[in-house]
Amino acid sequence: MNRTHPQRRSMDASSMGSTVSMLSKDEKDLCGGCTRRCVCIIAVIVIILMIIAAAIVCAVVLALPARTPETRFCITSDNFTGFLCDDRITCLLPSSVCNSASDCGNGEDETTSLCSNLPANLPGYLIFRCGNPQFWIYSNLKCNGINNCGDCSDESQSLASCSSCPSNWWPCTPVLYQYCNCIPKSLCGNGVQDCVNWSDEYQCK
Image (cartoon, rainbow, N blue to C red; front, side, top):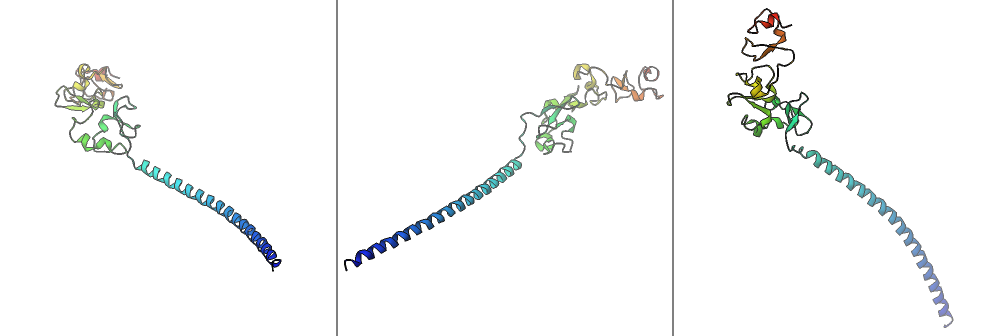
């Protein structure tokens, strides 16, 4: 009986070792496979999260209104002082502001806060005060040869800093009230007295 017991014990130990060795190998394969799967899953989750985050950022950025420029002052292509839109690119002529037509992308040139009390709410560089302070015009309408103020103050050298008649205009004292210091050359030689001294018919060419 003593001889049989050691042999059985030896067999059991041998069998147990084989089983443990087998389990260890299976566990290693299982862990290795799981690790690869986990890495793949985590990578996919990270990519999805990054896509979602990028989409959220884009949505927030696009939803944000354009930042208001610190100043609306700008110079137009015609060398007039103008009104700068929120896009910081578009520069409107003064006469395009509060004209009941949205010329800026967000309509900032037609807001109630800007246009409800004219000209008080307009920036000073967009307007010109006539000789009679009760009247005003947009600053791009002065020195254009036309009597926009009604007293020719918008065409004067002293008040409006006008230097001379616009190109293609003839200097004279006009007969017509709508002109101040000159007339359009298109009126020259038309058989009608447009200048007090008739120079539009005898000298203007």
